Length: 152
Ligand code: HEM
Image (cartoon, rainbow, N blue to C red):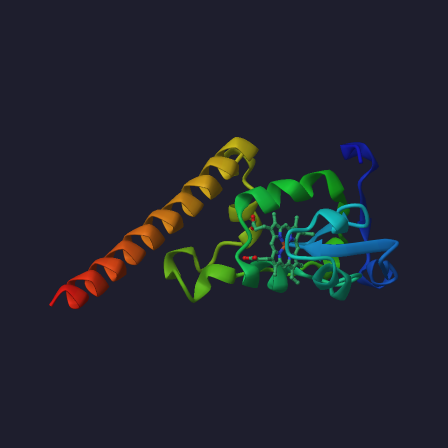
């Protein structure tokens, strides 16, 4: 949706869009029409259906989504919650007091800091490689221990 056609929506209006064929959700006071996105969600369709028409910020944060996930959202942005009904999100207050008064939006949606697809892909490959190397080391140590034990 183009920037100019974005609108402000009341929570009552957003709530009406809670069906799989017409699914909106609120994240950090922004409204997303995720109807077409659901089938691509790596965390499954059902969790998104459960959040239809509501503020899914807390659930989204709880999963610890990557910057790539935040980037994925951008094409589905259709507007924002009307200013009077907007919330303030102080997510990092408990974990890091220095960020306590910051609104999450300013942290999560800073485009200059978000990870591109290539960085995301390389990071995921590196993470899987690390797990593989650790597994091989653990398995080799185990086999070595068994061999030492048998040779006694
Ligand atoms: C519509 C906005 C959303 C987008 C664009 C999105 C995107 C993603 C992406 C890209 C991943 C892969 C992991 C990552 O890169 O972070 C993921 C995983 C996941 N998402 Fe979402 N997500 C959204 C909303 C939600 C919501 C509202 C929930 C919970 C109610 C949720 C639950 C999960 C779960 C459980 C996983 C799997 C985590 C894992 O396997 O480690 N997602 N999502």
